[in-house]
Image (tube, rainbow, N blue to C red; front, side):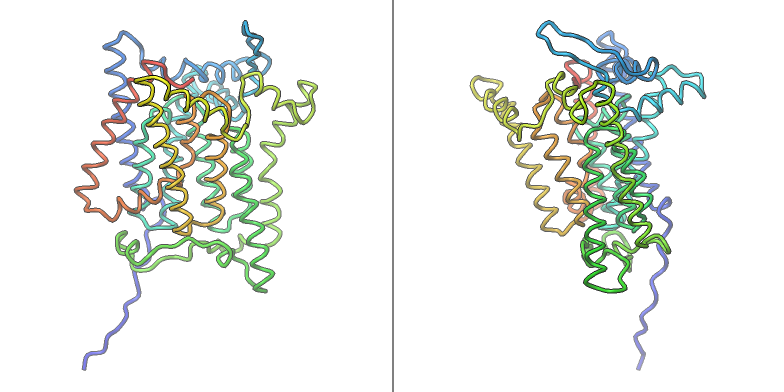
Length: 420
């Protein structure tokens, strides 16, 4: 009789090599979006590069980079728009790019956005690959690229930079690299107010890891506390014979001292900037909230947004837009709950939940909400798993169609109202 021998699975390729298809696909979609924007803008007598680098928030970031903080605009209705509302990491990088290369501050912002968008794509792949395999990782990146407002990923805005820091911080948590996770969370906190979502994810992971260690003496990995799932179908779909432990730490990385240091570092960015604004304005810990109030930004649990949507149903055709918004919100919530049912790791769920809550329940500019939701990339994971399970030709055709539609929409959007 012939004995059945279980052959050891070949080692997985290094993460950078596994990420190449995702990065190439992402770059192709971004090139398509920029090409369509350039053609559309030229036909309308506008400059596409100006739309990407010298309008809306891009102007505020470049002004901070050039002159520091202290600029404000007083509107006829009494509102005060202060540049203190804009967190400093992107302006710092723009100033650095201007100092080391022959770039204007706007040019430097564009370069940062391009590099950060690729870093974000790599981070999204790393997290999805860790949880569901390489094919799902590629699909998650492509889905993030074809978002209707995906053109923002190529603008001199902070969304791409924040998403890159958030994604890699989550990946560091999933691999037990606590100091790296804390440093990246601190940088995310210097990028956007929603940086608190990354801090919350790191802290929840640290607490869960500590509790796991108490209930299982000698355990150093948070696997028993929060664990994602990759089914056999996911593994086969990614052409992998084995899977690595989802939350196995790097050798020597997961120690109590490193974990404590990572948790201590995580909130320093956001807390440091908020306290600095309070000192500068003389309003103490609530200074930043008052700055945001001058922009009519606040957190009201979604009341203002609900009133805005309800008001759209009072006339036609605005009712169609209201229906689209309702469907979109319901879809986001459903995708998040699907992630819960699929047992996404706890820090991923916490991060996504905080991003969704801050975006949907803030009384800010309602037209900004689609781009404010862009960092909530884990809501795409259930769709990515479904796309990964489809036939490659069918999945590629679907992505191509959606990418073309997103490119056209992005060109129309930036040549019209654009992001406020």
